[in-house]
Image 1: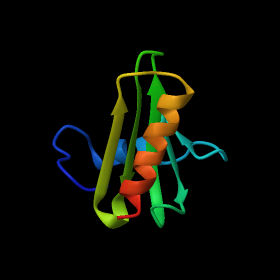
Image 2 (image 1 turned 45 degrees about the horizontal axis):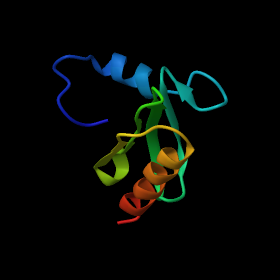
Image 3 (image 1 turned 120 degrees about the horizontal axis):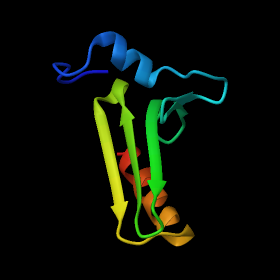
Image 4 (image 1 turned 90 degrees about the horizontal axis):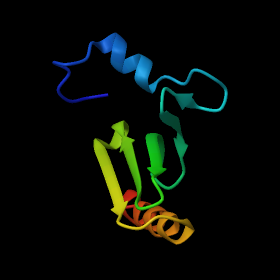
Length: 90
């Protein structure tokens, strides 16, 4: 990972993004190959039922994308994922 590391050590960053199990889960982040992005992608999504958001970081492409809605539920999740797919292919 790149960027300002003044608040985290390299060891801490590595631990945050390194999968701890076979399901690619890394302390709140998923770290896996993403066909849409064409590279390894670290991502996290979530909702409190009133909003839905996903953040995706593609280190090899020096890219980070955040998509947020002010609604929750399946339609909001689908809209965010469609938006991310479009942004990640550019």
